[in-house]
Length: 106
Image (cartoon, rainbow, N blue to C red):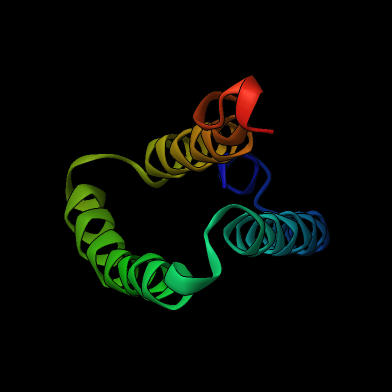
């Protein structure tokens, strides 16, 4: 998102959207695999329901927040902040397994 606000040209934008789409697809796959691997079978439906329910709730909330912030910040700043939040969330999700499971339990 940050790069999209800095390079407003069609072909670079399309390439960036493609790369972002692939990265988000990989992240969603990792989250799904982590749920299946780390959650006990008896609880997987409940946990997956909560996780995917939260994702469904955050999409309209993100639209509301970004719409209000677009009145205050320029679009390039809004994209930069959104990109940094997305990137930091991805890094946290990738590192959560290392911190959540004690070494003895593996």
